[in-house]
Image (cartoon, rainbow, N blue to C red; front, side, top):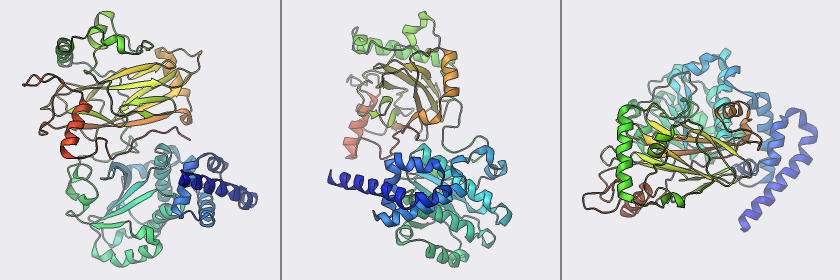
Length: 490
């Protein structure tokens, strides 16, 4: 408690002194949006303090320098439309994947960078675009920078550009860097990197990790490394769409239902109905529920929308957002092809006094069916979203889901046309986002069971209960190390 009080006092002092000592003489050198954010966003101020070891004088100098830079580079207004298309098509800079600690990877493919003074400003703005875009989306969650220097030589050395990148993390984006992974740096660049080290402070130097194929997986698992780095990631950069995150695929609505999917779904429903035999199950659900906007014939309602994975409401964790509480908080648990668990349940609870509209996006719309994927929830009500795999597909650790939510006026309708118009008009700053990743329960785990009865006639357990068993067996924590908590955009 004392630490938090001390931090709050430092935040207050930083704001007070910035207004008194810097703002009167330099207001024209700052973007007013940054000044306003500094007064409202405690986390932003705290990150500046952390990066300057809670020394307020040094923190103020960094804020001053970064604010002037932000205005010079028009950081708040950098969008795809104001940058040349060829910059994105080049593919030398992009965000993709996560390191072993759950931090997003910021890739620099050095062999694709050509030193050209005429293009330097635009390339620097592209770096600023990526950093700002990600910082706003994940509210400053730090990044791991990867310099992929495979197949590079003296022609690719651009110390001015490297210094700009270094300055972004040391001077302009506070507490935004976890480590710099340098892959296969050619010996000919040793002299250049001695210069780079001179630009870095002691903290940043300790973050440098020089690696080769044998060492890079100490920091990044093979699933997020391309084959030339010894990994198995089949990702190939292309533009468009913008690869700012994994959610640039189309909205996953209900998805096409093949005859195989429908047949499989009915079989699973029948099996679960026989297994549970609980006629009062519906009485345990929150009676205040909004139905999906998707029109489903009444004859099919009982067969499709009422099905829920057995006991799936017993989620271990709940993310408590400002608009919705979302359960589970971080991961959806699917089985491998052998275990056969193909359905998961997401429970949304509206904690506001207004109707909340929501929609669900996924990185793999061809694999998943989401019901409902675009609807609304009444004040105080709970609503179940069923996520199911199409036949023939298997869940992957790289698959992700994004839940977007925003408050609606009480007078707004909740039909298809009203929701469509609502999402077109709602300001992004009013949208809450929360991310979920997939966890695959492998059949090799001795304690893993499927949703259906196993051969020993032991009652089936939920995905998350199975996960507890597996984790208990391995003596590891039951929750993921990855933090995908959503935040309202500031």
